[in-house]
Length: 630
Image (cartoon, rainbow, N blue to C red; front, side):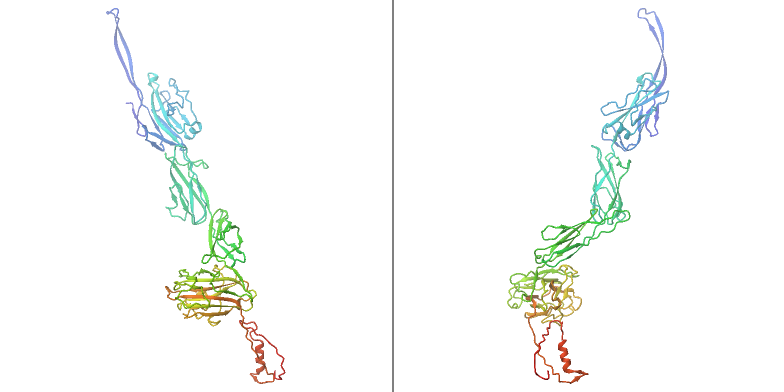
């Protein structure tokens, strides 16, 4: 009859009176056995209540100890506590009190002898409503007093008013625990497009509690759903488009408490608006050919403009490394003087590192070939036989599609595979001294830089031996601009044609297009038995202060069997041969042709003959004569 059930299906016992029983007895005096007195007494049988406590749904229940503990989050809202049977005004009293793990009372024990326990103290965060219900606000609890997040024992004392004595009160208890919410936070590495951004979890929680799970959302519309989220502690994510992104992080403790965002004053993820910066495109121009003059470097790096509302990114710094083990420089433009020519087949590698105003970085390397500058005068021509060393000449690959990039150029002693060397030859420059030249090769052999500013009639001559496939060839080119030798934009001009010079090109329209000529595709290609001496005038570069030549080899065949190309005994200087033409004119000759005096026409032709032409100098000599016909 006293059994009740809560709405949650839990059973409790209300207790109460079973009724009054009348007991009848007889009193007999021990002094006089004949004296008896009848006795009559009513006895009421009272069954005490068996109360229980129900609490609102916890974040989890800890069953690791001997008794289950309902666990609540500090920022999880009010905890509702219900005692059964509930207290009813004028009929029963129900009072809650709290104890710490050591049994020390946190809230005072009420005086249950009075109908209304006036001495119950309503501490901050804990409210006993006096009707068998109570509330505990963990947020307020932590503000009012702290038990270090240890377990709390909630005790419910229930007593019906008609209970016969104070001992008629009944107790129920329940363990609860308030645990802290973690505080989510994170930091990032440099925020730039097209690089991995490292997100580092900086969330905190009071010890000994720990963070159990993490949930990241990168809010990247250009990412796949799987890559747009992460459960890692410190994930990486790459944005391939600069702009603004809102990245959130939510963390959960080992007791199921979600992160509390302090700024938002709510249990919500930490949310930050991140500006992903545009990665710059590093690039630079350079001008400089020889060690005689500084090489100028100018950054041409760019950075994309940001979207609307985003801070603009600019190029903040450009750091230079000149590749020659000397101190670098910083600045949008700089100059550097190379004191030595770059090593053979190993150009200087110049590095420019570009950093934007928000820390995005890109870098670019470019090869730089530096050569020595040699002054050539009329009295001091340039001659080189390569016997002592390589002459300071250098080799560099060309840039062509479908070419392997092999380099066969070498300076040294020719092998018996070649015919006897050029006159006075000990060492030569050749495409592979010990066998055939390389397959699909596009390489260049560069000379020094020459100052021809005093030469009015320059020419070049050298001994050479040619043994190439009919599609392959070697061409001589020159350049007079200030772009570096390794610069693909440097302007190279072919020296002569197959119809000029002495022992000059013997190939035309070569399939390999040596030197990437604009037209003609000339070159030496015919297989020769012996060395020959090639000569050509250089009037196109007369008086030029900076001239570099290159022998450009290009091969389109695989596994060539021919020996290639070799050269030796080069000379660059003024032409030394003078031709004197003696001429007499008979003024009395009146013969005409097409209405023009023949003698006068011949005289005029000599007067105007190629006055500024290539390779010819007309020396006029006036002789006093007495011939009447002169």
